[in-house]
Length: 145
Image (cartoon, rainbow, N blue to C red; front, side):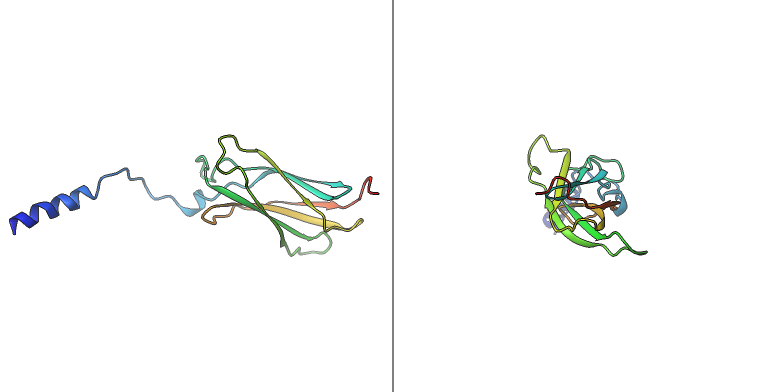
């Protein structure tokens, strides 16, 4: 019995090895919202640009950013209803130097119509940032053939 108790005690005590940290509230490990969301009219459509967040909302450096959700709503009316129009997957997740500025082009727009856009950052585990935006634009096909 004594021979069994000593290895069992070592196993229990040895299992506590490793670095432990205090629990972190979920709202502190979601990504910060993308910064400097801007929209412009091009002959091909509405171009959105934004800066990727580098930190979680709690201030820690983020290493698991995965994608961005682009949402659009009609620009007219009192209460906009946003719908996802694109998922921008990060191609540089595993590179040492990551692109800071990102962009996306919405081809499905009509000249003269107003649109609202917002962008949400998403980590690999699905944690979402607060939306960047909304930003409004009236599409004008400048220089279109």
